[in-house]
Image 1 (cartoon, one colour):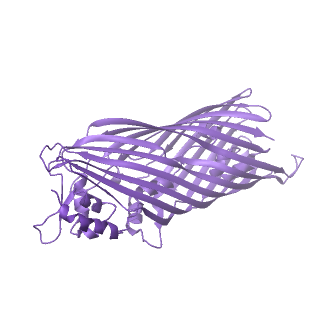
Image 2 (cartoon, rainbow, N blue to C red):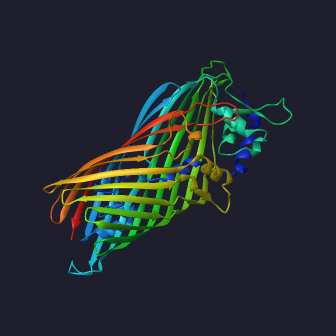
Length: 491
């Protein structure tokens, strides 16, 4: 048990071992390739169905032709309160966690340049310019689950991935930490080095907690025009940003009371990701009749420059009172990420001065997300993304009805699963459905809007995997609530 005589050798190996450990996985491709409905209160309360309606700043990140609908200049600002609840089911046990965040969903300015005073004359009516920020996704979440596993341990995973390597060649972010804290030990009676886990009798309690923070946003520069009140065109240059941090702790507690045996251990991982990118959007809206519009928009892939910082920690505790700790070096990695091309088709219906109805369809191919670096090929990661993920189809419907200076809004949205059926478990396919509602008050030069969006999805997570046996996973029922208020001024 007490391998004191190895301590100096082990410590030397920690100092001189610098095995690179990429933090990028297919989960990152999923996290950064999609968007949520957030932004102005009007956009949020109508579930983002503005592709053919236009006239809302957050719509510039959907169909930039919507800027041509504006008849006057406007400035908007949207604070938001976001809440996420995760109900986890693991080995028959259920837990629930909440996470709250205050943020800004939108800040934007639209300037209109009218070209003709006579509305009855033919030609271009106006050229408009928009500049500002739209939040595109929230990454705030908290997860916590536990259960007794009668079949295997994460230490089996560390022993399996260690294989027949000499301890000095083990990955210093994972297997080497387990070796240094005596959680996996070399078999001395084998011809080649093999490792055995410190847990030999299963039934131990497994616990996991994770807290995620961050967001994805876009600064837009949009230019568009209105031709004859029939054709509206626009283009957006999007400067995108990603901020994400994650702290997770995995723990196992044994049932053993035998002196020299393992009592418990924990494995902690810290990750911080920052990224900046660029994309282009092009769109049009055509109005063949006063009551009907249709819109088309395409989004180029977003090309990101990404940077990760990460570090891992491991602590083991034994029945005889011995405790061992180890930590990896500070890891960092620069790479590129390309997220998918998107296409959006929309219909809009105008019911004179009484109300509007918008219907959007969006296609997003998650399997086309790619990682790249001059120092690492990402062959396995990109191959898994291509095999595991699929094209998603998003449908958004939103409506608004007016009474005096008040507007009442509602909407629904649904996104199909981004994961192919062969990779889904227990009905957790990551499809998402949402419902929204809101109200607005409009005066001559000022408007105030309130919006709310509820969203629900089912997700699945395995803390580790083994080559020859199944590992229990957790199903997460994730619901989010987004409360937004927009203040706007027209001039």
